[in-house]
Image (tube, rainbow, N blue to C red; front, side):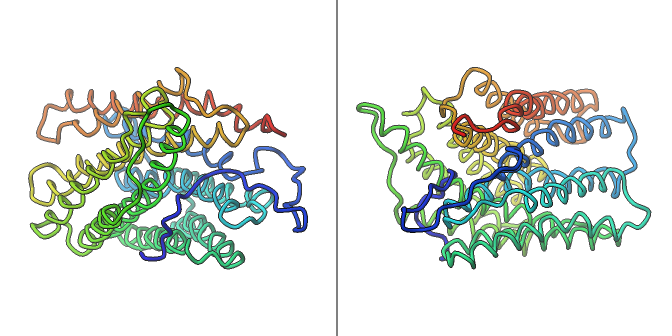
Length: 412
């Protein structure tokens, strides 16, 4: 992954070029489709707020299901290939103009991507008579997103961002493989692990850049606050260990070899996040929530290592990553980008802080939820509490930030 630049990845609106160069054309369409974060952050939040409670109702036998795939496969697919790609698309499509200086992806193209994503969610819940066609419709979104990213990389010749394009391309391939296996009734364990490995890498590379960068930015305005450690060889080693763990896990789902690499990667990244000194930004939740998310990432590496050794259930370890790291980090990025890109102060008020608390509490309940060996009533209660906290955080985001995302920026 040497193509990853050491320059922090920032999500901010590209500024016009100098007067002797052509400026980015003005946009006269609906504000909701002016930047990728608007439709995709709102879509991700609403979907997370609805799909997880639906899954809990199914798993507790409160309702039945008639999805494209069996209920468990539907849940796994929709969280890995439905919710998270929407959040990633919102981030990447908004960051691209800052990387390239080109016109943002907006208007008709952005509408088309959003429609493809929504069509995938609907067709998975209300399948067409021909499952192969349904799978093709769902797969089209990530394939199209990867194509757009590569187009922008090539047009601006920013080959140092190729790692992002490569990971999203692999993500699209994993989704296709999931459909191929699921349609044949074969276990989707391999594409699941490939996708989770890609998520580990994306959070490590992107989260490992924006988190210290935003912490530095905040602390620069505070007197005698101290500073996070600068990027060093240790950070590079921590990233390489995650890459090694991900590649080993794809090949071998359990065993001492994968367990050792995961534990080493987890320990290194715990040290890495500690070196960012997030506690110095305790007054601003909008800053330290990203370090909390990265802390979850480090813990997920340790948990996956423990699962490889047979020390804890694999499902619990995976949820340290999906509900903890993904939940906290996406919520942090979504709130920060939504405020900053609409001309509002980058400060987390009480409601936003409540979202952070809910998503983390929900993650804790889900990670600690007992296995099938425990009494059903106790396990169901833990899952319900997890859904209330985790999904409640995203529904609260949709309620509070939805009007912000739909309306024009205060700077327009």
